[in-house]
Length: 341
Image 1: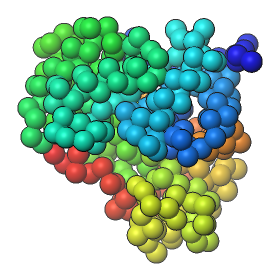
Image 2 (image 1 turned 180 degrees about the horizontal axis):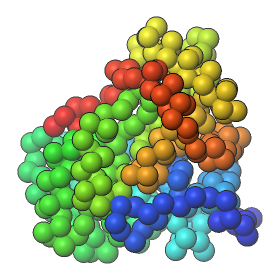
Image 3 (image 1 turned 135 degrees about the horizontal axis):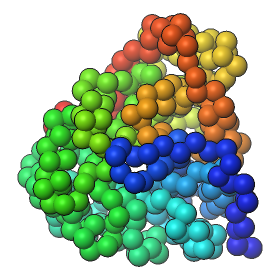
Image 4 (image 1 turned 90 degrees about the vertical axis):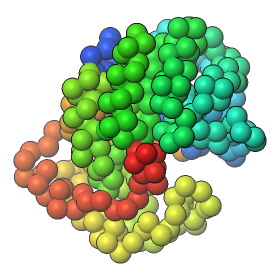
């Protein structure tokens, strides 16, 4: 049966304005990077999406190559959207991205106009949408002129295929330049999506200042450091964990130093009456310049536990000082090459 959304879905969720735009996003948004490909039962994905919306999560974040295989997260989302969410389209913010390897040959990667606009058309087809709310350049391309990449985003907005333009994993300098180019084109840069967590604090080195000055929103991804900032790895590497599978998270990131920090942060979370994951999510939202934080979920229960982080967002100075002793760079930013470009 089609989903009937909960009547009180907006009662408890916190919404923050995205920079100086008119767009508001939920404090926690749902990312479909993992758990929505063909390797997972579609009914599990459907249950997570339904529950997210019922909890007031109005923003679903995708990319062209999310899966596995590439494109399958968008395809599966499109099927679920058609069955359950089409009547609620105007209540949803749906985003997608292009910038990483997607199809063979010279036109299926990076930041050319050819790739970005072709990819957006493919994404819209897979999801069965007329437009996305946000279209991102997924990573900086050191060889394509920035004006060409940003010009493609401008074209997507002017064609009505996207409402807002965004970038992901751009350095502070490149973000500042991107904002200038888009401003001159008449399509503001509305949002930046960087990685950020207690073990990956690179955006504090200037990017947040640029976003604040230029009125750009910030939605952080990987706030749980791909599961490291949960209780999953406190006592080793479980067989079913992401670190045990080939993919983006290498067990080499689970250094003794990182694990010591994680265990200390887990104790701080316990004193606050939170899980480590809830502490990590709340911590990313302590700065009002962060509009939203992306969470993933492999089950409805995990999603509900993440959303419960919003029940305790306040930090006193002593707690922040204690966290800072352990929330240090852990050499886990696998997207650094883009933000250094």
